Length: 176
Image (cartoon, rainbow, N blue to C red; front, side):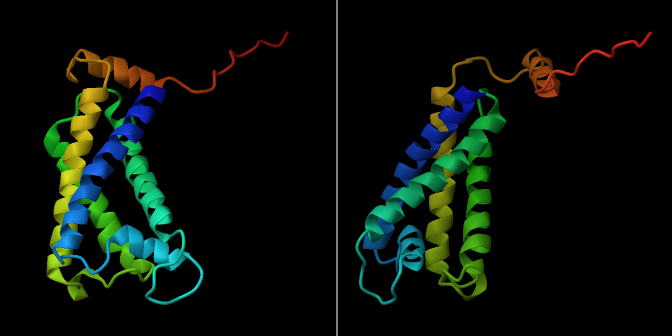
């Protein structure tokens, strides 16, 4: 379990690096007004204004990798060390995009809700998250230790590990 957690965090960080490269290219192409990690960092630092503040770049990078790694950890744990099909990763990237861009960002006022946002920006973020999910699965599959795909032979063993109680249940004691 610990190995799956670490693999998920490492895979999430690697996938975030790929996603960050895409964000930088999109920012240079003018598709983003301001990359989301920078917007979130600007909202959390004290003081207002459009000028960059000290620590903004570092905070946005740390927050972005922390979020990407934590989301990668979830899939790493769910995969139980088994090979994950690429379409599952792409769908997981879509789920993370939905949570972030349709849920979290509008709810804290970082961006406008989807219908009011610029379509080009949302399309770029969606494509980036699909790329992130795909890169995450490729990294997880490369990092996993068990090389066999999830089959009917492995499924009962995994099911038993999930059912095994974390705290041992004491045997009943008879009273005489």
